[in-house]
Amino acid sequence: TAEPLILGIESTCDETGVALVRDRELLADVTATSMDQHARYGGIIPEIASRAHLESFLPTMRAALEKAGVDLDQVDAIACAAGPGLVGSLTVGISAAKALAASLNKPLYGVNHVIGHLAVDELVDGPFPDHFVGLIVSGGHSNLLDVHNIATDVRELGGTLDDAAGEAFDKVGRMLGTPYPGGPHVDRLAQAGNKKAIRFPRGLASSKDKNAHRYDFSFSGLKTAVARYVEGLEQAGRQVPAEDVCAGFSEAVNDSLTAKAVLAAQDLGCSTIVVGGGYSANSRLRELLSARAQSAGLEVRLPPLRFCTDNGAQIAAIGSALVREGVEPSDPSFGPDSGLS
Ligand code: KG4
Ligand code: ZN
Image (cartoon, rainbow, N blue to C red; front, side, top):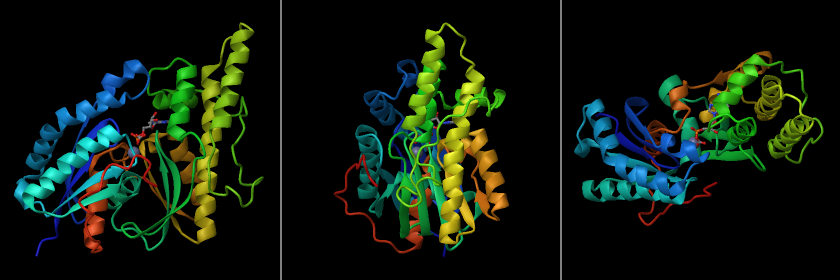
């Protein structure tokens, strides 16, 4: 008998995603984004994002079904992101998922979007090892996870105490006048700069802080240091060396992320680090993590970029893992959980 067909729905932020997955095979993954409507405000406007989900949902779902060559009534279970994210955005996706589940009389799973960022890697690189460390970095999250089973046994080792890595990049982009979101622009500037020209502080450096916050990150002190440096030059009427500022800043962020990911893997005796989230696009993260993992004898699994930004495949992937592990569907009264841990 065929493996169950899972329909996944993503609507935590500005991306409306619908995907179809059978076991670990991705049949279709369609995404609509409202980012172009937010860019001129320099940040996501929740009301605009919610309305865009409402308008995009049916066209996105129809496109996914058509691409997969399946009918809605062939779907065996539905998964939707229950959090963390924007309440209004989540509500649109959850409402759609509940209506589908009720009308098709199929089980519904409200899942954790952040865990989905890791689960999607199984669709690309195959079944996970028995034990691995997850590093999830995006505009909204920066987490280290201890994973024995992606569906049933995920423990948070640590996370950011303040800004997420992508968020810090976006803020530095704003200081330097790049378009929103600044992350990719700051990355590009950093590649042209000298990463040793300006040394910015590392938050919660593991050498200084052996146990408390061993696996946590902090980027707000770094962000303030960059702001002071830029303001100091501006006030003195001197030109800001944007490339070198970005290179020094990027080095500080990526030094923390990669050192702690490798440290966690070594502490736990895992030989694999799985990376996810939109910030995984960062060129220096990829380079430094690969280099450090290689010297430590660790394998790094980095999914292609289209699976790193928010998408329906990550939700269908975790839904598929939950079904495979025989986990009970969600209580049908669940709602959006903006702070889901
Ligand atoms: O996962 P994602 O699409 O959305 C969230 O769930 O946040 O991540 C988007 C974040 C933004 O902050 C964006 O600026 C950042 O990831 N980002 C980057 C790069 N590409 C995207 N940050 C640094 N370097 C990049 N190349
Ligand atoms: Zn995300």
